[in-house]
Image 1 (cartoon, helix red, strand yellow):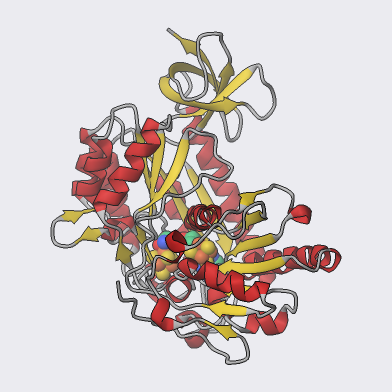
Image 2 (cartoon, rainbow, N blue to C red):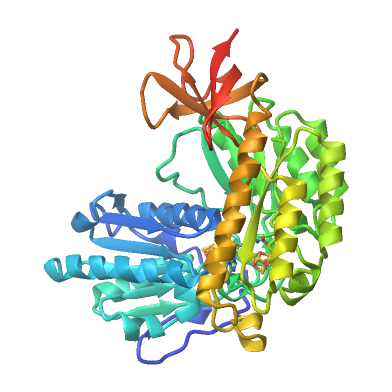
Length: 473
Ligand code: SAM
Ligand code: SF4
Ligand code: F3S
């Protein structure tokens, strides 16, 4: 495999990555030199980052590490970071301060910064955070053995090479903090879309799809181990393409065919790319969950153009109407950015009116946070005052709460097939599980059922975010 770097390391001051070693199967040939040493790994950001931590854990276990839930007793602390908004980065910096204090008491400890913030800041991290030893970007995890042995010799290391090919397809993730029922399966990496607000294309590099055989193998193994739900992950799953023979609809079908008892979910769909073929495939297989996460970002076409989302309000609404026509029971969720550069009151009202029309089942809502290096940071002024962003955010939140409640209430009186994923947070007398719409349902336990079972639940009432019901025969 030849990796073509898009983004070379930056400073000669630190132990640097040896480019010729990219793609080598470093782990397999190494003795377990770290037997008995403990790894603590903490993850921030999107599901893809959490899935990456499971790949990192797999690489580390191969080297002999065992994981611990106590960072103070760890030999290596990894923090897998997110750069999507400024506050995501601040959380990481605060956490690093706590880790650094632990390292002062345990000088042999190695602290590594992984993921998107590592990629964005590169060796600047080592300058800014004196107690960080390793900075490693999302496409360079195979280089961990090198960087760790350099750290053992007292050298601090950076590898932030991005790759056009790396998908870690051959690595079996170690499931961290798993309920043993649901797992993420990455089907692609990177993003080619260049939405003007977004840092992801810079931190994750070019889009590439993972080979389907390895995806099917991973999902099949999960099913055989007792997992009952896989979520296929990518920043833009609809542009999954393997050579000229398999698109996302085809992949979805292959995963759905593994077993009718394996639920299949996917995220994230891009409104410009989601096809009717995918909707038809969802309809064909009962085990493909009727839920689509379709981030709209704004309800106004001028703002969408500034965001470089490449669709209009009308296009988005047409996609919604088509989903509702083809899959009437489908739940739809979204992401929204509030107070993007130059957004007027009327444009904000357009977002509210779009929400009122669609009535999303749930939504992730964010005030705009300018990210250095993005197209928006270069081209537009972040000119909406914080208090205006906050006021608009609260209006959007209020609207979404009303929409979520409206959608939840529609389930009352219905019977849903629920996959039990554990006990409710409040009581061991109640099970908790998910409907195919990705809605949590809480209902009394019984002796016959356990985690991983499907049960039919009659929905009797709801709270603002949860359905309450009872198992029926
Ligand atoms: N790939 C997905 C898509 O196209 O919608 C989403 C990826 S991003 C990890 C998740 C969400 O973060 C975005 O949908 C957007 O709402 C939000 N986001 C991204 N950049 C942001 C920024 N600069 N400020 C606020 N929210 C942002
Ligand atoms: Fe970011 Fe847009 Fe790519 Fe999503 S599609 S990751 S918002 S650039
Ligand atoms: Fe954050 Fe990177 Fe995901 S910026 S949202 S962790 S792709």
